Length: 375
Image 1 (cartoon, rainbow, N blue to C red):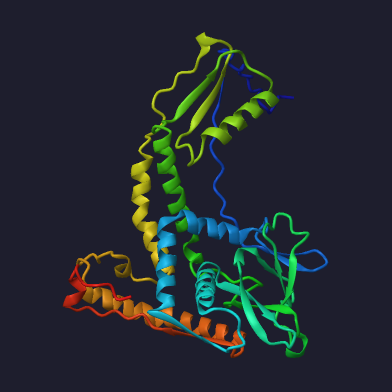
Image 2 (cartoon, helix red, strand yellow):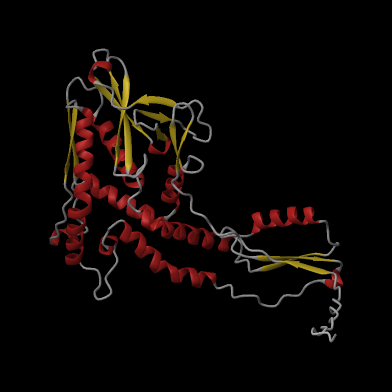
């Protein structure tokens, strides 16, 4: 019988010349923005905030280290405080108006950064409210049924967190303390920050500034190749050395990438020409307009209020006043009203807050540099 199948000749595999050079390239893993995940932990059913229970601390670090984010937050804080914060209080209330002013500003700052704020109420033996104390929202966690606030300076170790009841009934307050909290609408226990849609842009702004700072401090280090010419170690040793180099020299804090080449000797040293352009500063600057616009839009703040002119016109007072009027009506006044209602309701008549709206008026005297300050 004829063989119906043809036999295919086996082609020998070409010999590979051993050069004694092993080159390993690697890149940084993509940056992952921490997520505001919630989970219930422990017998007290405390709701953690973030994978490491430190999501508020992450938001605060962005505020402290990102110029445009901090500017927008501080800008909003000044507008929320208005022309004047006017306090009045019952003679039995022991706190000074100056203390109430400082507490209110801190609460408003938390309200902007976290969309939540909290303070503690202290009662005398007769159950009368006599003092309040600011609670730093980065240190506040709630239990699942929102009956308690848990307060701790470092939520990495939360075993000794202080529990404070939320909204004690009138008859249970004698000589005790409780807490109140303002939380905007949220899907879970913790509210979503108002700028959440621009969080990636805020992170980009933060990392670009970090890159430029370290680029200067590292004398504009370029992409590099690191040769180890003492022979090729075992895989475990190579991994340990490469991990240490990656951690120390790569990323936005070191402004450069690198290649590790393991060689049998100097004569086998790898040679690299230009792998890529290092004009990262130009590339990053090209992103600036985009991320700044995203952040400003998230705050619903007209660009004119930050001193930017529009594409068609330069900055002028008419545009500024019109932009502020829109911002004041749609963003500032609603937030002021919500905060004042919360504050006055929580102090139950022992102290009251009223905010005189911030107004903008221009006249010729405003441009007189010798005009006395109105204090």
